[in-house]
Length: 103
Image (cartoon, rainbow, N blue to C red; front, side, top):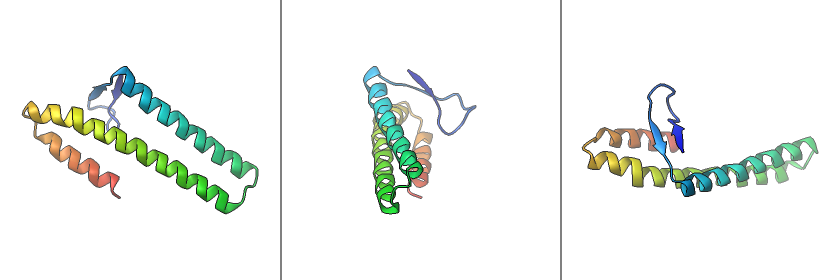
């Protein structure tokens, strides 16, 4: 399934994902969404601050794991294919992306 480029609405970049990759990523996001909804419910239920913070930390870790999986796939496919095709500009894009992720 083709996805729009995440950093630019007009660049036209898309990524064809295998059904397996799409399903894995979508499942991860669905779990994260469930975690966020659980945190909202905890807030609504006046849960203790530390309990909410622990759940936020778990959601943050889940988002980081999603990023690692997506970044790894991006490097193995998009970056590698572009370099093999002679497009070294993708290296600068990767460096910029890594700098944004490391803020």
